Length: 252
Picture (tube, rainbow, N blue to C red):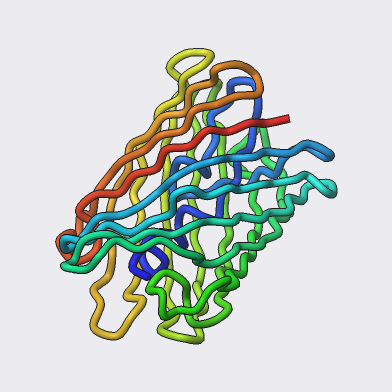
C-alpha cells in the first residue's frame, strides 16, 4: 500500500499532547512530540489522511485513534483504520489495513529554565488485519522505533523534532526524520510548518522529502479541529504530489 510505505508511518505515531491552549505536535502533523496525556486522561481522534502521487490517491477513511495516560509519563496507543486506494487505472478499493499499537515513554523532562528539551521514545508495531492481496494491508508485522523531542521557546513558539528507524520484514527498512515549528496566534488557534524526510523504503524507490502546513483550532477545552496539507520537495511526482490530514479530536 503506497500510503503505508510513504506516509502512514509518519501520520500514525501520534501524540495529541497538551491541553488548554499550548501548541502541540502529532496530529495533524507528521512530526510527533514527546508529551503523553496526563495520568488517567485520554484522547480520541476520528480522522482521514492520505497522499496523491502518480495519478493514485491512497489513505485511510475513516480511522480512529485512542491514546490513554495509563502510567506516569506513559501513553498507551491504539489506532484502527479503514484504507482506500483510487486511480492508477484501477477500480477504487476499500478494506482493512494495519492496526497500530504503541507505547510512548517520556524519559527526560524539559528544563524550563534552560535549553534542555523533553524527550520520549515511542515504539510502535503495525499488525495487518487483512490479506496484503487487497493492496492496502502490509505483508508482515512492522515496527517503528522513533525518539521525539520538544522545546517551548516562550509562551507562543514550540519546536519539535526527531525521527527513527522503521523495520519492515516484508520489504526494506528505512529511516525517517522531521522538524516542526509552531506558533500560537490566539488562545484557540495554533499554526505550524514542518519538513520531513524518509530514506528509500523499497528497492528502486527514491528518497522522500516534503513539507506540511497545518493548524489546530480549539472549539472548546475538550474539542479540537485538526487540519494540514503539503507536498513533496524531492521526487514529488513519484512520492508526494499532495498530502492531507483532517481530524476531529476529543480530549478528557
